[in-house]
Image (cartoon, rainbow, N blue to C red; front, side, top):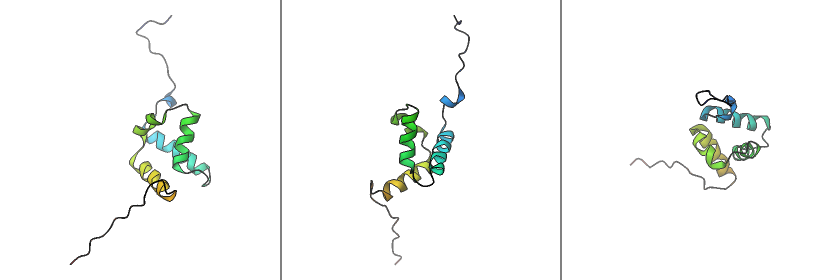
Length: 89
């Protein structure tokens, strides 16, 4: 029996940071040779590691979010946005 002041060792790979999560997702996409997009990579990661989708939301960095948005636009999941330029008068 362990005393209450001893720490239980937990593998480091169980705790993800946004940077490490992005690195893992980038590796999945890169290793798929273009067959897996970022959305599918995240879904696959969650299923393989028994992680709920809501849990990884806070781990999605801005660059990864932009790549997900690009994939979603390409797949017509969301409308394409354009940055309109106002005419100079």
